[in-house]
Amino acid sequence: MRTVSVAQAATAQEAVLPARVQEALGELVGAAKEGLLALSVGVGLGVLAELMEEEVDEVVGPKGRHDRDRTAVRHGHDNGSVTLGGRRVPIQRPRARSADGADEVALQAYAHFADRDALTGVVLERMLAGVSTRRYARTQEPVGSEVEQASRSTSKSAVSRTFVARTSERLDELMARRLDDIRLAVLMLDGIDLKGRTNVVCLGITTEGVKIPLGLWEGSTENAAVATALLADLVDRGLDVGQGVVCVLDGAKALRKAVRDVLGADTPVQRCIRHKERNVLDHLPERDRAAVKRRLRAAWKLDDHAAALQRLQTLADELARSHPGGAASLKEGMAETLTVTRLGIRGALKGTLESTNPCESMIECVRRTSRNVKRWQSGDMALRWTAAGMLEAKQQFRKVIGYRDLAKLAIAIAIERDLTKTKLSPTAQEADTRTA
Image 1 (spheres, rainbow, N blue to C red):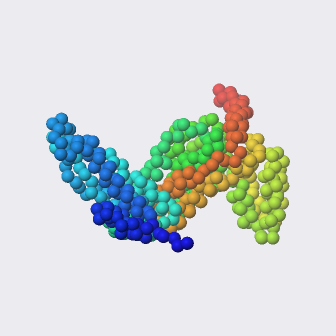
Image 2: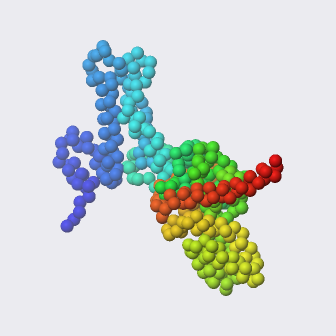
Image 3: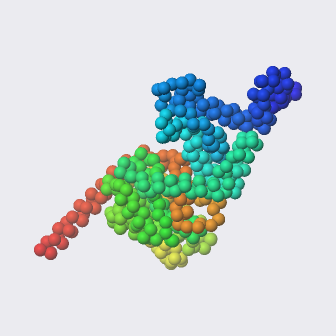
């Protein structure tokens, strides 16, 4: 059975329609030959024109009827443009002015469809999906040759300007948000290298298990000054860590120093066991790596903190004789690789918080969305792209595995802090007595 296309059917019907009807449908038949979407666009633009004319009638009154009480009058037509599928399309829009001619009367229908937010949203989405500015126009939906030729805002420079403006808004949104209403249980810090430029990013996990991008800071390297500035900014924006937060770090000394300086020395820190594992194995020959990896993972898997720490210490002592570099790497911050275990966290949540994988996942989204950037022209550019990627990742976030035990984590941190203060209190009193 032969299939008849929509355009062919429309052309066949045209031959038997009255001349007046053929004239009215002529443009639509041409659009139908270019596809259903082009036909829909033609119909939509016609409907928009009718909507604007009807709104003028409502504001001004029926055309040709005198009304001494009218508050506005018609003022002809003018060139305008509306947003359509990631482009701007020119149209003729009716105008109206107040009866005294002093002010322009805004038409709601035109204002709605002329809004550029829809355009900037499409540009941002396509750029983050990997479409380059040069190829942006090729990703447009077919809307008909006539509309396509008249459309604008699809050139390389126009798309670039739109993307810069929208990512600047994303950066401001991320960096200006108040954090007073967030109750955090976990804070993760990590750095991302963008071809010579480094951004330190921060991911928070609430007591309900919700992951939230909190902020970022730009610098030449992942140094203590950059991390300190980031944490200080979070505190200035109202972040409350007084109720107990564990910080998960990749092992960088700069990040550790920043946590101690800004959040306090009593803030528990969990060192990422995956980073520690890689650091230790890099000091070993290939033949010894598999056995050491098994022993490391077996120790970290234990729920008994003392036993796990003993196994790691034994392994470090053995490596000290054969591979002193690997032993030194393991001993450095070894106790902090067991912080979550020390706090009594077990099961799925322990596996989640032992590494910076949640933060790494967000960073991977930043890398993926910015993969087409060949040259980072400025620190502002790096910040804008990173912020856009972080907020893009937020849309894909799910609650962390084991989130139901996060309340236990907060309680364990509070208890440990109270015990530490109790142990230190007598020492402080003795010091005061000696001073007196």
